[in-house]
Length: 174
Image 1: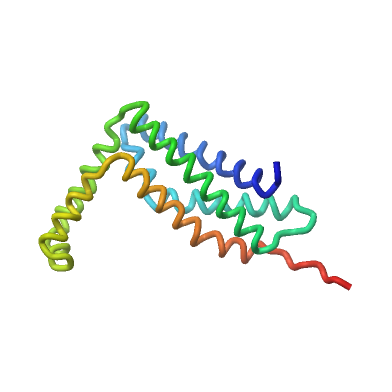
Image 2 (image 1 turned 180 degrees about the vertical axis):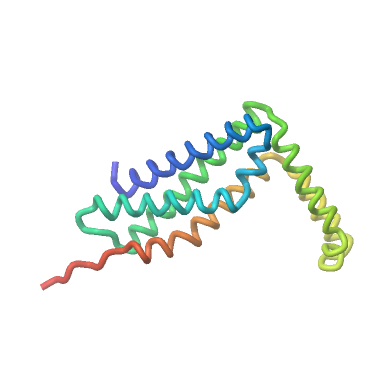
């Protein structure tokens, strides 16, 4: 297997290990892991730290160094692997284990929409508000898709920065 694939796969599995560990810790603490794991304050740094390590390991082990396109490719692959595994963990929580975590997540979203009713009606109108309120009562698949999209967005924003700062200069040709 190519180092270009092995490095992001390995670090995405390590990051998912921490997500699963966090799931069990939150369940043990009687907290909702879907709500807490969807929090950008947790997922953003976790995704970014292991993305950095994935690119760094490639740079340090590849004798030719790291080009921007390689770092970018590793970052995108890492983000896709992480998002796929993260979505599987969420799907297992909602479908296989049949927990009420997604129901609680939906209730939280609907409560936030209702709390901001006045502001939302001013911005969207009554009909737009009602549509937005209905969207808060979405299916598990839609919630998982939304959280996966957030992870991909974080990866797309962080990857070029890490790739740019981690790249090595090309050897001079004679």
